[in-house]
Image (cartoon, rainbow, N blue to C red; front, side, top):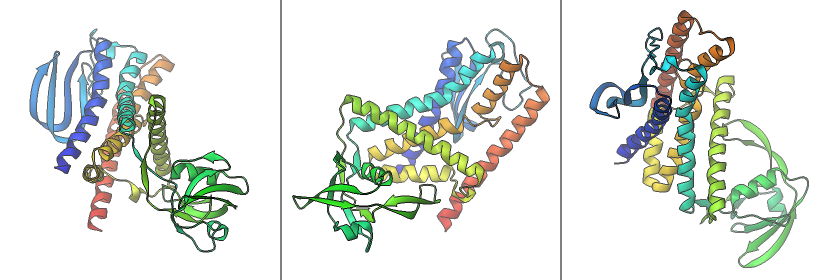
Length: 350
């Protein structure tokens, strides 16, 4: 059942991406010939809104085929009034941006729905205290709840960790210990740690771990909107940074995952409950939006790059150059997909 949910989530995210392209293309008067979820042999086909809609056998993506646009052969063009090529470069860029934009909008909606359900967050409750650490020396104990730092109220472990890492000198903690309030002063120490990308970094810490206590994050309507906005922005930054680090070699290629990882993690999220599924779906939606903006010719970002060239230089790029770059783009994409699947299999076997 969980694998079916994984497939539905992935297909739904692809559908919204392609729906963005479809909607803006139709608004700009472009005839959309085919709207497909998946590639390969068509399993289900029907016609509606003057477009052929299909569900295909390989659910690893999707596409909208507009009149005058053919990624398999960029030289096949049509300049009829209702074709993609008859539109201005700016209009084409709007069509291309609509897909990733739809994924960002969908992620915002999913995060907002999560906020409506009062998401669980990690409470600032102390678990283990490292011996001889600043927290140990100052007298912090397991199960202490940190109420405020330097007079500023905190409600989550994330808030607490951020304030400690940004501290200038000593900090004053108000602690709830079994119903009694205590004031503890200590000075965070710069220590080695691993960030979310597995890199060695230096950060200020006090030597405690979380007890794993969760509580509901109660938000008003404005807070829910802020939560959705912040989460969408954070996920976008996270993925942009991850891609940059992967390209620069700061993160090894072995860390990259493929479709098997996506399905497995979605499956695990399904077992954890609907909130986890929504959270992971939102993250993957942002992922799709960001990755499709990369300047790889087979992706939206590559097509945007060609149209920007035409917009700036007032001429179309050479057909030969477009064709060769598109082929190279497909090679890069299939190479990355193959590497992701190879890493997935290695992780499963290992």
